[in-house]
Each structure stands twice: as structure tokens, then as C-alpha cells.
Figure 1 (cartoon, helix red, strand yellow):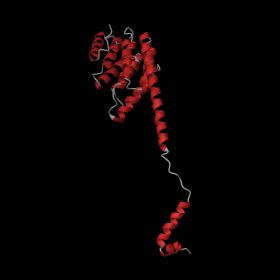
Figure 2 (cartoon, one colour):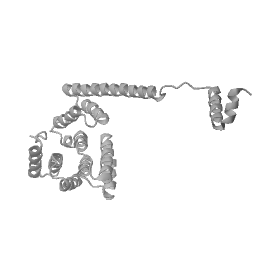
Figure 3 (tube, one colour):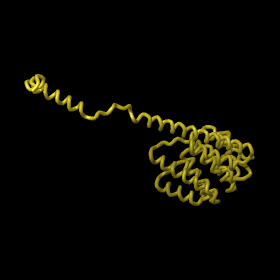
Figure 4 (cartoon, one colour):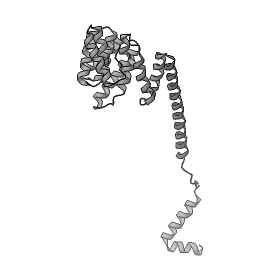
Length: 243
């Protein structure tokens, strides 16, 4: 036995440490690698930025198309494009303003223009969601009902809202949209009742007065209609009283 090994034998602890070092050195090693997650994170961030830029360009293109249709007098096409923008970006200020202009530009010699769903969807989406899950449920039902109205299904919209109201999901939005559905169905008394409920929950909303004006016209109450039109315009000048 060599002198070195003799020394190891004399000191068992030192021998164990040396043997362990030799054994570890003989194992195949793995060169430390840089973090493998970083490139993946950067790639995902890059892809997300590209997708966001694409969506922003598409949104801007649709908004510009909506403006062009509006300037050409094609209100239906303008509304369709502006609504598509709002679906992707509910807070898009220019598209929301354009929808308000579309509601104001509807021909006043046609009473059904007062119940144009563009006005209802614009005004409803402008209100913040408050009051927890019940308020959110009412908003969801209202959105579904508006879609049914856009699909020319006022009966289905009214049925959906009545079921929600029976479950205690009352909101001014729901009653206003129900009034639109009832008006489309020529149930003017029911439309009036729904608007009265909407005003009892929110007596400062101009659209409720504006819709009530057209509903009362259908019911033969010209004085009441004129008062509600004036009230709507006093709250918000974009609701121009019919002349």
C-alpha cells in the first residue's frame, strides 16, 4: 500500500471524503445551461404583441369603415361596423360616440326609429356593472335580449327578459329593452308599463323618456309624448325632440 493510502487508512473521515470526490469526478457531468424558459417567454410575449397590433389595426379599419358608411348615409352598414368595434373593445370612445350619432340620425318620421336597438345597446353598455352577480346576470340577459332584437326576434327577447324579471333580476336596462321588444310587437300598453318600471329604477335616463314619447304617441297621448320628448332632450341634447 502506498504512503498516501496509508494516510487515508489512518484517517477514515478524510478517506471517505477523498473517495467521494473521486467518485463524483468520474460521473458524466452536465454543463450548466442558461434558463430554458426565457426564450419561450420572450416568444410568447412577441406573439402577443403581434396579435395585439393586428387587432388594433383591424379595429381601426372597421371604425374607419363605419365612419365612411355614415358619411355615405348607409346607417345600417355604419351601425354594423361600429358594433363590431364595440364587441372587441367595449370602451372604444370614438365608436361609442358614432353609435350615439347613429341613434340621433335615425329618421324621426318613423316611430320605430325610437326603438332602434343601436340606441338601446349603446346606452346599456355605457353603464358600469355594479351590485355583484345579480347585476352581472341582468346585464348578461340584457345583452342576449339585444342580440335577439337585432335578429328580428322581439317575442323571444321579451320572453327572455320576463323570465329574468320573474327571477328577481330587475334593472332599468332590462325594462328599457323589454319596452323595445313590446313596442316592436305593437304591445304599446306593455311597452309603457315597462318604461314606467325603468323610470322608477332610474328616473334620470334620457332614453327611457325618449322611448316613452314614441310609445305615448302610439297610444294617442300627444301631450304626454311631447313632455317626455322635451324631458329627454333636456337631459341629453342628442335626443332631439321629433318635429
